[in-house]
Length: 169
Image 1 (cartoon, rainbow, N blue to C red):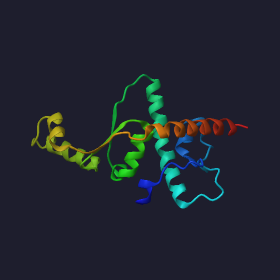
Image 2 (image 1 turned 135 degrees about the horizontal axis):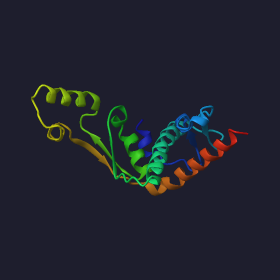
Image 3 (image 1 turned 90 degrees about the horizontal axis):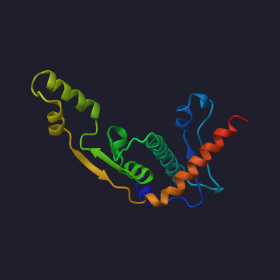
């Protein structure tokens, strides 16, 4: 999927609405995800990019809710499967306007279990020191193109709000 690295935001307005948007709200469980566009012939690349951007906008929405609660988050550490894609991490950093940190060891559950086992066996005695010794940063993604996504995120959430209202008609 190297083409995604150079594939710019679609100026024709292609977006995806994920079902997780509805699942977070018990009163909207009947809503479904979908793809919206105003180009009669979107390509496969448009679909894939829209799905990734739509999913990343879910993170931006969650960050907006957290911000409304006056909780300050300056960075996000990503582990597991989603940490294995440079493009995915880049999109999340750009859309959320937030540092994304990916650890060298991406399988955090396995590493966490090993750390707890080492402490339980008495090989290490201090949890914080053990984590500092065994967990290291692999890559940091700074938001580079957040400005171009500001309009996208606002448009995405406006579509979500309108669809939410229509779902009750």
